[in-house]
Length: 82
Image 1 (cartoon, rainbow, N blue to C red):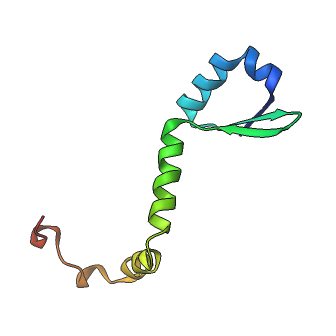
Image 2 (image 1 turned 90 degrees about the horizontal axis):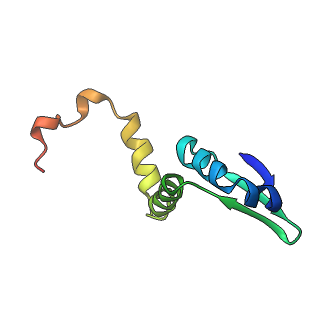
């Protein structure tokens, strides 16, 4: 995470935002009233999707259970009806 203060953020906003977008590196901006974090849109969308998936009851347990299943016991891709 890149750390900067509000003065330097204002001065370097274009470069900092380009770096955040290109490398998905969040920016922590400190001010006298507290801090703020800037994320790339991709990171924000990934975070929202993770929160959504985490909110579905039992999904995490089902995924872990599925990962532990023997591959031979799974239905082949050709047999799945989409």
